[in-house]
Amino acid sequence: MTAALLAVAVVVVIAVVLLRGLGVGVDVSAETRLLRICQGNREQAERLIDAELKRNATLSRDEAASRAVQRHQRDNR
Image (cartoon, rainbow, N blue to C red; front, top):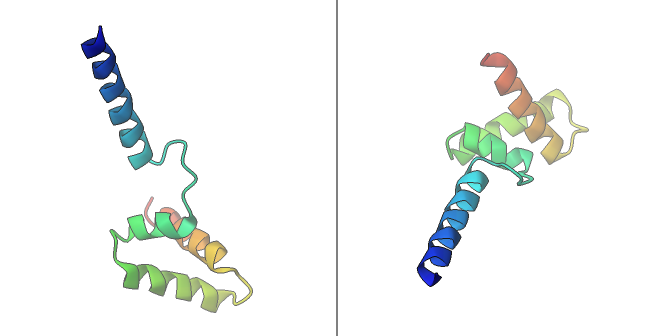
């Protein structure tokens, strides 16, 4: 019985890790989403945030990142 419980626990842990990797049930910041879109390239993400801030200087950094994500999604349909 212990081996069966261990197997179930391992499956649950793997499922949680995989779902987190997909962003399911996790509140991910816009900046993190943008960084993923940029494949980890921080300089590119910064340039995109800066471009949004130049368009509208009253935006917060998070809102600028969110708009950059939206712009990317719209432009890449």
